[in-house]
Structures are given as structure tokens and as C-alpha cells.
Length: 450
Image 1 (tube, rainbow, N blue to C red):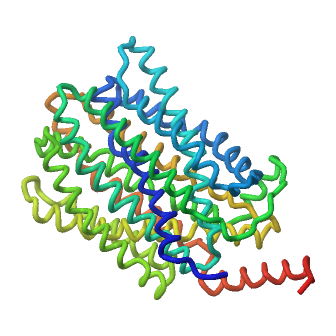
Image 2 (cartoon, rainbow, N blue to C red; image 1 turned 180 degrees about the horizontal axis):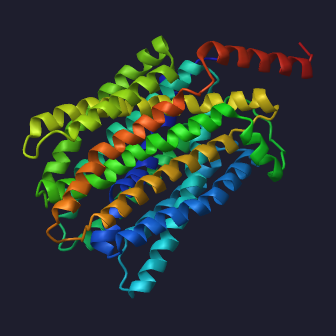
Image 3 (cartoon, rainbow, N blue to C red; image 1 turned 120 degrees about the vertical axis):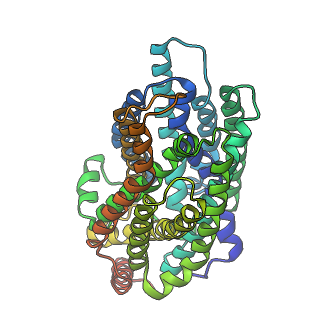
């Protein structure tokens, strides 16, 4: 198989910018929108996040099953991008819309739109990610694809979301109007970019349509140790940035009196230099040391420097920025290597079970990522409620301390859990080469023709 060209890699990976304009807007601002704009209590927000993820435990495997069994003239996974992008982004607009409803009706509306968004996000995001496994089987090419994806997802999408949203929303008479218009703009951009990725991606690995039964899903996943370990690590690693990003608006608004969002925007703009540096360094580091080792070291860096940030007194911006830069460099490396390892679990599962499934592993990782969103978001919301947070008022010392711990120590703790999990990951570079060789030998025995 010929190596992927830069044009092929770019054409596919730019789609992650579209997906993450949607995903990051939800991750950064939906909890704040629900409490400070929509008017829900932190307890209701925590409940919503957890209930949605319970449903995902059913929905995501079914989506993976659907993806594995699909086969069209446009490909196995690409059609989901074509037909799912617009509905996904229409529901994004609905999530940030503020209808005039009773308190009970608002809760029902929030549950309906948020759960529907999670379902549609899986319908688009799962096949998009699974495309990596059918574009190439080369480990380093997969690492490069992951680097490009994380560059668009983190360095570009997060910059747009974290730097631009709050100042843009502040230009409107109310935050309700500001968030509604912002969601509309993001929806248009996201839809166009996902369609661009559909048009420019190519499924090059010939994969037969799998016909396993639904009852085989759990045994098939249970035998894939690499998938289970990496999925748990992904959950913890997702919690790192979910808690930090979800609490950032509270942190700067209430601890730094940044009501306009200007300081928060500057902070995240500066942090993107660390993200870019991580994206540039990742291919060489993974080639030299392997993805698992880089992921583990990156988790140590995140845990150490986010915990150290708790010691920085308020008012000292330079130490805050400097320590955060190093921590965010590690976070970018962790994100890149995490997604670069995901396709390898497909071959591992094929080698272990005899069934090649792209859709089901990616469904599992989609579920773990959304579980990370739920666990991180719910933990943050519950801790805000426990410490006495009340929206749009002067906060008590206990509430302010809770916000600071959530921004610093809680993400550090989740990164430690991620590191401990990775000690059990079974795939090394040499082992992966053995797996692919054995799979090729099995295929040759089934088809002895020259």
C-alpha cells in the first residue's frame, strides 16, 4: 500500500476541526450555560450529564454495530459524515437556545436536546474516527494522522472556542442571544468542514462487512485487553481537560474578577502555543520512544504541573501562565498519543478474536470519551453545589476554594489515574508488528491464490 500523501492526510484530518467546533463548545460552555444562563441548578446539571451517559452505554454499541454492518458505494464510514453533519449541528443550536418555559419544562428540554446531541455526535464522530483504521495500517502514519487531528481539534478549535466565544457573547444585549448566535455560526462552520472531510477522505484498506451478532459484542470487547485498558485511560484523560475547561469560566470570572472574559481569552490564546509545540513534537517523540511511553510521560507532566499551579497565589499571572504552558504541552502530547493508539486496538482485537471490527472499538472509545465528559462534568457540578456555589452572586470563600481545586488539583488527580492505567496496556511496537504479520499469514491461508 502506498504511503498517504500530505493532501490525503490534510483532507481527512481537517474534519476534526469541524467536529471539535461542535464538541469543544459543548465541553467549554454548556455547564456554564445551563447554570448561569439557562437557569438550572448544579445538581440538575450533574444528573443530566450522568443520565445521558447511561443511555450512551446502550446507544454507542448499537451505533458501532450499525457502522460495522454498513457497506455502500460511497464506502463503509464516509456516508455517516455526509448525512449526519447537518442534524448534529442543528441540535447543537437547540442546546444553546433559551426558550421561555417553566422550570420543569426547561429540565425536560435540556434532557431531550443534550441526549439527542450525544446520539448524533456518536453517529458522526464514531465513523469519522474509524476512518483512520481503513486509511492505513502503518503505525507511524496513524501517529501522524493523530497529530494532524489533534492540531485541528486542540490548537485550532480550542483557540476559537476558548478565546473567541466569551468576548463575542459579551457583545450582545444578553448572554441568551449571544450563545444562540454563537452556536449558529459554529454549526454552519462545523457542517461545512465535516462535509469537506467526507469529500476528501478515502477508505484504502479493503474491509469485509462483518456479520457478528449483537450478543457477541460484549464477549468480543472483553477479550480485547488493549481496548479495555486504553478506553479506561481515555476516560481519565478526558476528565482532565473536561474539568479544567468546564471550570475555567468560573475560575476567571469569580477568582480573577474577569466578567468580560478578556483574561480567560488571553490565557487560552497563550496556552495554544503549548498545544502547537506538542503537535510539532509528537511525531518525532512517538517515532523515537513509542506512543505508550510518550503518553505515560505526558501524563506525569500534566499531573505535576497542574498540581503545582494550585500553589500560585492569585494575582501572579506570570507563574500561572508559565506553569500552565508546560502542563498544557503534556496534555497535547497525551491527546495525540491517545488517539494514535486507538486504531492499533482494532488489529489487536482482530488477532485475538478472529473478527475485524472498526465500528465496535470506536463505539467503545466514543462511549469512554463521553463517560469522561459525564464523570468530569458531573463531578465539577456536584462539587460546585457542595461548596455552596450560587450563580451570578459574590461567592463564599468555600466556593472559591472549590473552584480553584477543580481547576488545578482535580485534573492532576485524573492524570495520575490515567498514568496508572497505562501500565497495563499490552501493545508495544514490536508486538504490533508481530500481530500484523500473523494477520497477514492467516489471510494468506484463507486465500492461497498468488
